[in-house]
Structure formats: C-alpha cells, structure tokens
Length: 140
Image (spheres, rainbow, N blue to C red):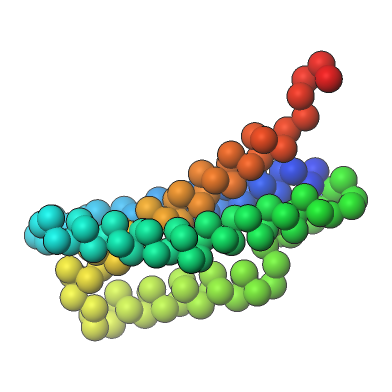
C-alpha cells in the first residue's frame, strides 16, 4: 500500500509514540518502590543521552530521507530504512529478554525504561511536528 510521502512522517510519529509510551509506562510502573531524586535525575540523564545522541539525530536523518523521495507516493513501510528496522528489532528483543530473564533489578527498569521511553515518545512527537510542518498550506 502506498501513501503520500509526507504521511510517512505521520506513520513514524505513530510508531515511535506508541513504542515510547509503552516503554515509559513500564518504567513509571517500576518506580512505585524506587522513587527518589537520584533515580529521577538518572532517568533525566538517560533521556538526555538518548535524545541528543540517538533519537534526535534519527528524526533528522529520517526526515531528510523521507522528504528527499522524488515520487509523491511511497510504500507505507518506508518510514524506516532497513538499518532502523534492524535496530528496533534488536532493541525490542533485548528489552524483552532483559525483563523476562529477571537479570535487571526493578530500579534499573524504572530508571532506564523511563528515560528511554520518554526519549522514544519525544522522537514520535518530533516526527509529528515534522509532519505538520510538511503539510501544504491551504489556499496557497
């Protein structure tokens, strides 16, 4: 199924927002016995690192790639490239194995998942903003 190229940004918004919300939810739920200023600060640091060095750059890279398509319509899955699908699959598998194995303590889940989830959700929101900026002006 093909969609208008700018709608790939909206698909990316939905995918990243859903993933971010779910990871953030897991992290926040784990905070029930781990709430402290230190843990909140650590979550903020995790958020900042991922936002600056990973997801902020990812949004810009994919926005440029998507808007660089010459054809007006693209397959809906082209909101990502192959490398990004592989990274997402690796992250999901790693997260499931980490939580399922019980290796990571609840404090780690609270701190890391809250920061990571907030950064993923922010990436989704940024894709949504890029979508709104890419929309044609009505009446122009």
